[in-house]
Amino acid sequence: MLEPIKRVFQSPDLRKKILFTLAILTLYRLGSFIPAPGINAANVQQCLDGGSTSGGVYDLVNMFSGGALLSVSILALGVMPYITASILMQLLRVIVPRLQELHKEGPSGAAVTTQYTRYLAVGLAAVNATTVVTMARNGTLMGGCALPIVRNESFITALVMIIALTAGAMLVMWMGEKITEHGVGNGLSLLIFTSIAAGFPTALGAIGQTQGWTVFAAVIAIGLVTMMLVVLVEQSQRRLKVVYSKRVVAGKTYGGNATFLPIKVNMAGIVPVIFTSAMLALPGMAAQFSTRDDGTMPEWAVWITRYLTVGDHPIYMAVYFLLIVGFTFFYVSITFEPDEIAENMRKYGGFIPGYRAGKQTRDLLAYVSNRITAFGAIYIGFLSLIPLIALVLINANQNFPFGGAAILIVVGVGLDTIKQISSQVEQRNYGSLLR
Image (tube, rainbow, N blue to C red; front, side, top):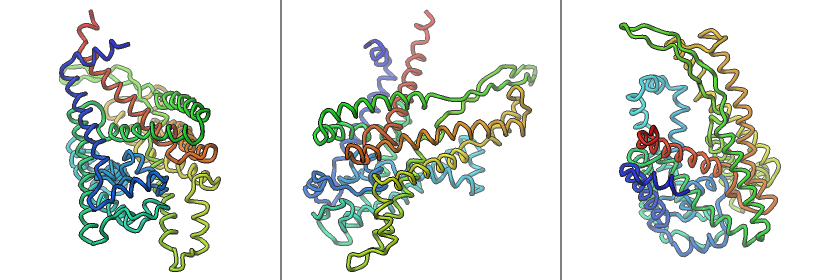
């Protein structure tokens, strides 16, 4: 059992990459416990001990930051500004011709797009930091906690907090890029993985203490079954056979071989969950801002507060599920382009047996993609409902450890990282494998 681990650390280069990755992840977790300037850490801890939470999309941000958001640390925003910027750039590529041109230029265009994404991430981080500081000052960040968590209400203090949180988000982005460049695996994904995994012991311990160890054992069993199902679906794909015709260029023969075009069941990943959480948070925020001076709300705001802000209501669950399904189809339609794939296959002499290059190939790809996406959308929707069902059955919070975005990220990143390490081990031990 220890032999694979021994083989990993026998390679100096791979060992250096793994140790570098672990060092960055350690610094990231340490930064999550450093409070932002102007924050009363003692009052924040008392509010957290009392179970106060913001709810809505900030629960998702708090989970992605490993609890740093509600602790109002310097890394409170985590990776969310950069993730949101990346998603927006993908969406804008459809409507902005310049971004579409950069996409077609290959690596050089990707470098420019990455720089644009960084600039957008800075702007989003500043906006998010302003929102978090405002919520911290008016007391809405901690929900029902009445203790003041900001020491000074002055404008200078607020400005310093906003700058600190924005700089922290940029530091997290830099850490992720350095892991990708000098470490093992995708840096941003590993940072999210670390944040979510760090919250598992606390969440499981809270369930065991409040609900009993019988419920704790049941949750562990549900978690194991869910992980196995996620591994099965995440590894599932439809493979379309593609044959390339032989071509003679400058006296050399190219092509003449067959390969496969893999179409994953879950091509959207966790993006639909992020979209849906953000969309469902908007009505709740609008309802909060509509509160009158006497503390009352309009009828529409009361209806939203009752049915669209708490995850244990059937209306909330139905809207949540339908939005995830809709966003899954929308996102896949943007990222998986049958026209572009069919054109590239035709350009290099490839075709799917039984289908002509061009329109027939494009129609087949669209048909297969839509059918697989239908199953993938339902799968993401039901998986995301697990925390909401747990909220009803065992009174757990919406950050239930074995469901939704958490389990998708933990399993997906874990599988991808293991594959990359195994691939590098095989490359460095290729001679021994032959022997």
